[in-house]
Image 1 (spheres, rainbow, N blue to C red):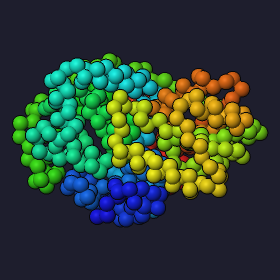
Image 2 (cartoon, helix red, strand yellow):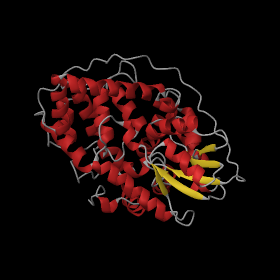
Image 3 (cartoon, helix red, strand yellow):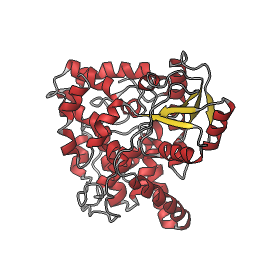
Image 4 (cartoon, rainbow, N blue to C red):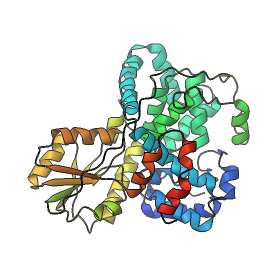
Length: 403
């Protein structure tokens, strides 16, 4: 299998190549074999498209269209659902943003605890370095740090062992993933860790079992001394959901600048609505999601995708100025005489937080307009309860997408 997690494969072209390669396997083969983790460079039964979908290098609609052109909805049901899980998680968190802000506050507190509590610091460091003595866990830690990727089943086992065998705070585990995963997503990552710990579906936890690990790694690992019980963690109650905020329309008569960020590498929907663009800037907020440093792999990945996006859309803007803070954005707008900034909508996470700061600090005569994708507008409002209720809408989603 080609290694899709090396820097020379970080492009839309390579993502489309990988999609074409995977399409024949997305039906019955995926349904039957998707849970097997054969190790780094041997992820034969999954798409490995998540880093590209997460940043919309390729879109969910493109992926679903390619899969359903080859397979019926019934045969490809498991993969189609896997694609829609991402929309579900994002929509769920979008309507309950305080779950993210609480997690961020917990991380700030835990950073202090790591610095002041030697036992916690030692356990956390051993887990992050893959030095726990649990062979499967240590292998997954090394794979994650080295490649920026883990099989989904391994992520579940890893999180369960982190919480229940190593007795480490789930928030530190979620942060470890977000710092290293190329597909790290605030919604799916945070809510996935909460699910393992019994906070997301209240009272339902996930226990990593040695026999399950041995079966689905095909005997690569047969761990012993794992936790045998997984009691639900305690935490604040699930907040009441809030409506998804409507967005201000773009005024195409105003002098307008485009503000790019890391959440949307595909700009087709935005460019059709934004009118004439007078200049462009790029604002990366990825480092703001963690109290520690983001991995070099992730930062190189994001930088590579941004460079390719700039090249791909070069007919729409000649140069792209880099900005680092909300104040930088305001100064860029002033220097270019902008009356309006348009940017892709960012779901709950560090970029969303930064945009809210920008809106608060921007002068009243500078209009800031975000543009959300039709796919997100269609799917997110249905993430009101559990995924099983959400998935009942999948046939109607596909019909609306024209698939």
